[in-house]
Image 1 (cartoon, one colour):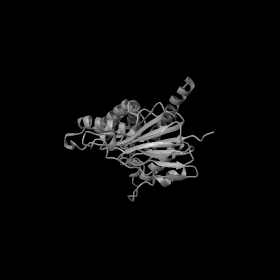
Image 2 (cartoon, helix red, strand yellow; image 1 turned 60 degrees about the horizontal axis):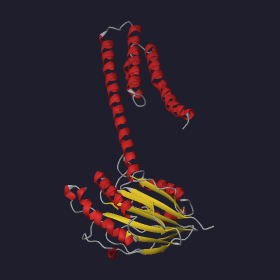
Image 3 (cartoon, helix red, strand yellow; image 1 turned 120 degrees about the horizontal axis):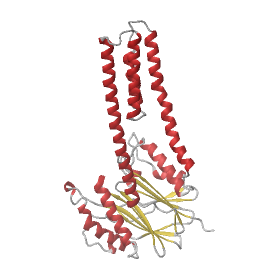
Image 4 (cartoon, helix red, strand yellow; image 1 turned 135 degrees about the horizontal axis):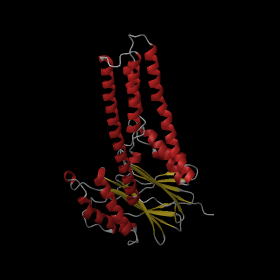
Length: 371
């Protein structure tokens, strides 16, 4: 961003706040003039407290204090105009207006401090997201890729869903998963599994062998993150994919995770028939590759694999209806991965009324048509 763009970004909120500042100033002037012109038995001075209260909604404590001082000065001018500045009524009104203005300024200062703390939390959350969930590159070999994460926790950027992709000698290897539970424990479990995947993805030639290695890591370390009242109940559903650069197939191993959608040309949608194994972390501990099935599904050029977590298909609207991902995704089957996820994000949030009940993650992988 150049200097001109930075100045424009700073100038816009500055101009907006100063335009809004005219409202309480005009309000003070109008109340003062009307009070002077009104009959003697009509007293509008107490309404001046509206000005600092209104200012606190869009400005900081200093500006709010300035408007409060102007309101007190206007009240004093009204009393002086009528020759009753030191009367008991006007003095009480001045004291009350000053006290209320001070309380509004204090409230504004507390709100501003909370806002700074929230901004810091957001920045830490964004940094943690980039460390834990590395954004997928736009291209993974011959594949076009895009990812989307929607956290259910308020003001959070990450949760218990996870995804990652890495290059191997012959293609791309991808994982998407969903940790049981929410909160910091779920984030720790997701970080554990992602670290194990990134380390083991290059050490095992087959997906069943990789799944067995992840199961052993989950059984060994997941209990360390589980709360005491949920000991022994931690598990992770995961879907592993191996997509070779050559050929028109994709190999998958499901550990209790939903099968992806295969979006083809002409708005066609197919749900592959997988043979899922139990989720990671619930096995007996001595997992072997024989415990996991390897499913091979067609993945022709021009098609898109849409991976997702339970938070997408279990999202409910006000009537309790689940989000129809397959039917909605079919509308945008011919779109690029980024455009596809953009449409799904907007449609999903509209379905749930703007707030998800569970974390949601999606990955779109498109195999470009062969020239």
